[in-house]
Image 1 (tube, helix red, strand yellow):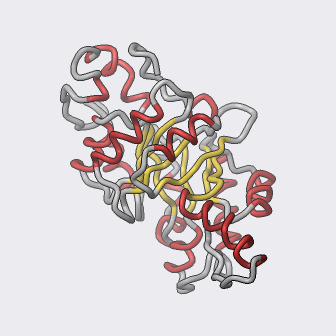
Image 2 (cartoon, rainbow, N blue to C red; image 1 turned 120 degrees about the vertical axis):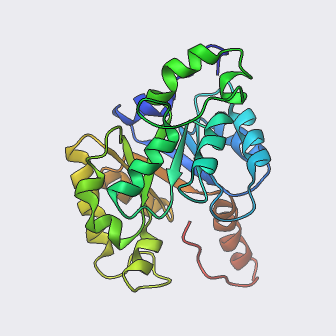
Length: 264
């Protein structure tokens, strides 16, 4: 990204004709993000909610994507001011909020991710502001360019989706089938009974408001289905999952062990 350019490359793409394809990142090695950028993926999400990624890891992944057209999002561990402001201060293009239940949860995340008067994010001379060298330029664009995306992964979120979609500044939602299934009583299922229909209902309602919907694909067939359904932001898989997806059939063909299929 050029020194004076603080635009989020994902935002205009979500309004374009082509779906935005990305990768879920769980490994600390920043080469993963570097390769994703070289391949031309539209976005990566660094998962700080699960696994071992910390703020130093996030910084290295952000550096790996610098100068590319790949947006870097961070799934924060919780809807807290410290988690949200720190990853944005490091230069993330946006955050994914876990376990959103209500519009109030999302509004709180928006508050933590926005400077006054819209929010309550504090000003610090960190990496996002080019260590204070580009403070005014960043402050002028941050509220509009930094995305705050709720994960719709609980039954409560689906039940409250109408009010969630009314929150000011919302541009995208991201569906989580496994956790949604779990919250509906189907632990360990990707799309338990009725969940597939609920996901499409959210997709439809969001689309009517011009809000993009995202989801992870389990495999190529699932990817094509999600694209046909109209998802604007589709994850091709996770870094570890993609390795597993490639290695499992190779090992099976060589007479090795068979393994349970990963979700993504």
